[in-house]
Image (cartoon, rainbow, N blue to C red; front, side, top):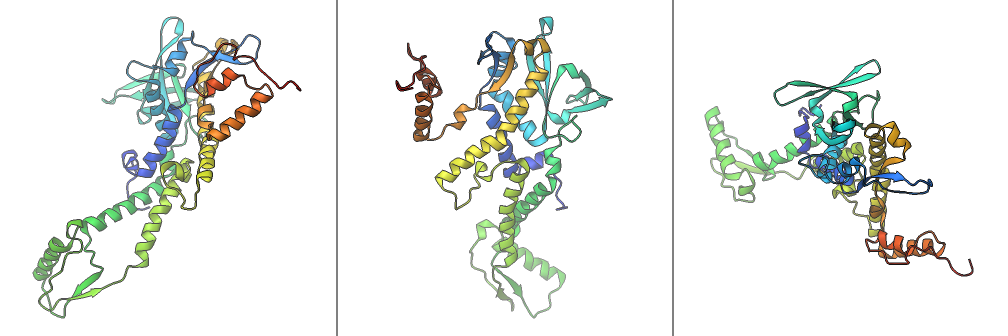
Length: 362
């Protein structure tokens, strides 16, 4: 409705859209993602380093990407397209040996009853058909359960308005004769004289380089100053509001992209960061973990106790005082051993530190 075409590339040029995508993508990539296996006694789990999927998820998914780069890429796809497509390269005995990501716009999902297949188009528009068994499809929020709802498509009006407002501001600086007034004359000007006058004024007064320069009037021209209009004030307010509107669509707190409320304090900001982790990132973590369990592990491996898990404890760390109180209380009731506390603080264990200790009166 704003008259601006909202393509994917155009949307990326809106800093708020790109920042929201980065917040989610980097939030997914910075947290370790490891394959675990439940212990035989059913209590706890250990990293499944002997499983081939462990290194693919945690270190090197393919020949040119690190785990961080790979998960950042699919995180950006999920945040802005609500779909991520990854081809599963299989080796001996059908084991997955490589994960290759596709750009979402190059993949088309074909539904045949309850069966799915994927058509992938390369740069030469050549079509490659991929079966459902060989495609790891991670969906964002979905209406039909087959594909995620395109985030940019749903937010196109808010993004279009942000693009229009930004273009309006840019035009003010590039083309605006901003001396806060108008030129007038009682003389009659023909078309040629009017065009010459406009061109002269544009050369001497328009643009940033000519800001605050002195205007020389002649030939009966008069300068009539005008005040700063309410429309200009509303324009600035509109640009600020569009930041919040786009963040709302991405479900990202504005403070996470640097748009903070002036009334925010350090304590409230810390709670906002925790709220971001709980309400924005945890649904994505859960979605990806379950998708891995269903699509990258077979039924036999799931029965053996294999599962994927993001390690988000580091992001939940508060201040030193908060962490100290947390450790002290759990240590006092035997909930944590000294070595577990040291591990949470990235310190090496010591001999005898695996003992769980409680006060004598307990």
